[in-house]
Amino acid sequence: MMSDTGRLITERLPVTPFHQNCSLVWDPVTHKALVVDPGGDAERIHARITEAGLTVDAILLTHGHLDHVGGTVALRTLLAGTQTETPEVIGPTTHDEFLLNSVEEQARHFGLADLHSVSPDRYTSDGETLDLLGHHYQVLHVPGHTPGHVVFFDAAEQIVFAGDTLFRGTIGRTDFSYGDSRQLITAIREKLLPLGDEVVVVPGHGAPTKIGMERVNNQFLQ
Image (tube, rainbow, N blue to C red; front, side, top):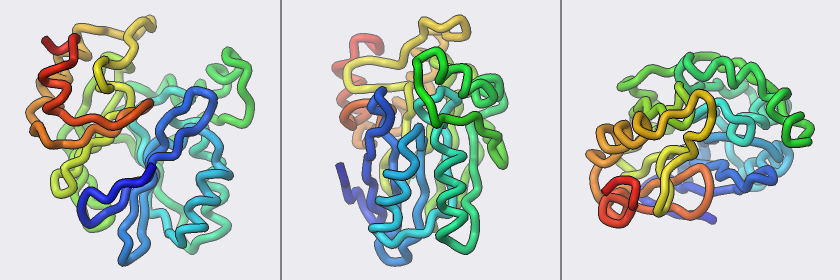
C-alpha cells in the first residue's frame, strides 16, 4: 500500500509469514530512498526498488526481531550490485544487539530459512536526529517490546515508523523474558502521544493509524 503524506512517498511491503510491514520511503524528485525494517523477502523488496528506479541511502531497523531485520544482509548485498554506494544500516540501540546477533537462531525456532543476523553500521540513541532524504528523522527510544526498540519520527511528513510499539487498538507484545508491558505503555505515553494527534503511525504489522485515534480508543492507553 502506498501513501503520499507530503513530499515523500511511503509504501508498505508486508514480508515474511509474519506479514511484517517493511516500509519503502522515497523522494519522487531525486529518487533517493530509505528502507525501514526489511524483515525478509529481500528479492521482492529489491525488485520493487529497481522497478521504481530508486537509490537506497539507508536501511533503518526499529528493533532486533527476525521479522524486522532478517532480510537486511541479503537486501544490502543485492543493492551493492545495482547501485554505486552501499546503503548504511542504522540500527536500534545497543540494547538489542543480542537479538540482532541471534536471527538465525530465532529463524530456526520458527522453521524459517534465508534470514540472517545483522551488525548495523551504527546504533542509535534516544533523541538523536538522522538527516536522510533531506528530512530530519528523530530517533525515540521506546523499550518494552524489546530493550533497544526505537521509532523514527519525521515531523515534516507527520509520520512515525513505530515498529512493534503501537498498533491500531493495541500495543506490542511484551510476553518475552526481556519484555515489560509497564515500560512499553509508559514509553508510548511519554514519547509517542506527545507527537500530535494527526501523526500517522506506521506499525510493524497491520494498517496504519493516527496518534489521536489511539489516544482515544486504545484500551492500553486509557
